[in-house]
Each structure stands twice: as C-alpha cells, then as structure tokens.
Image (cartoon, rainbow, N blue to C red; front, side, top):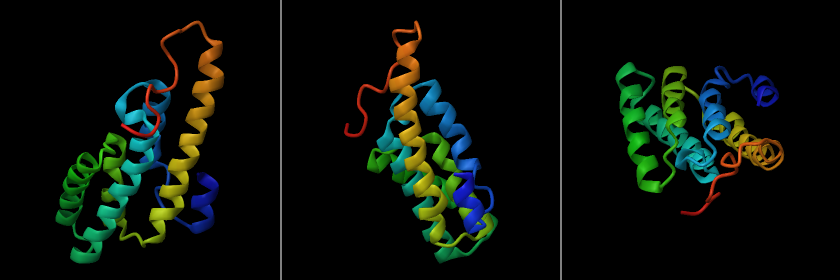
Length: 141
C-alpha cells in the first residue's frame, strides 16, 4: 500500500487501513471483517466522499456530511466497515481526486483482503486457538 501511495503522491494513505488491519486480523469472524465489508466499505465511503466534495467543495461541514452519508450508504449496501468511515473525511479535507478511489483505496483494500485471507488460513491454523479462524462468511451475506 505504501508503494502505491508514494508512486501516486497520495497523502494520508495509511489512515484508512490502520484500523482495518486491526479489525480483519484481530476479529476475523466479525461482520465488519468480511471482505465484502472491507472492500465494499472503503469503496462506498470513498465514493460518497468524492461525490460530496464534487458537489460542495472541500469545506469543513461537507466532511461531516460526507461521513454521515457514507455511514448510511455502507448500511444500505451491506458493506458496513467502521474503519472506512475516515475515508470521506480524508477525501473532503484534502480535496482528493477520483484516482484516490482506485489508488490507494481500491488496491489497498484488495491487498489487505488478500493478506487477511493468507493470515487467517496459514498463521491462525498453526496456533492453539481453535476459535480464531477465517470469517464464517467471506463475501456474501
């Protein structure tokens, strides 16, 4: 993720993913840890932030509106991922362009999903914790 963001000169690339990493690795069976929620939540939230900044501009109140609308949009699409709630704030405050949706958000979410899948299938199976496995449902509800 760092390589993609430094290549595209995107600020604050790690903020949306720091708490996502904790969620998907620390609570793999939680609904927000599912790949659908991880990838979809980040994409939906970022998209909402981009729409709001396009319509309202990078003003402080627009950031609050974008976060609220993103929360509603994640619930409506079944992609609720609380760490993705910061995405619209980053988008509005920094007046990000549409490429932010793809790099680093889209690529980063897919990379994190791949890493979490590998981690949950390789590392947690080697531990004595029988209940720490991959999510029960990986993509669909």
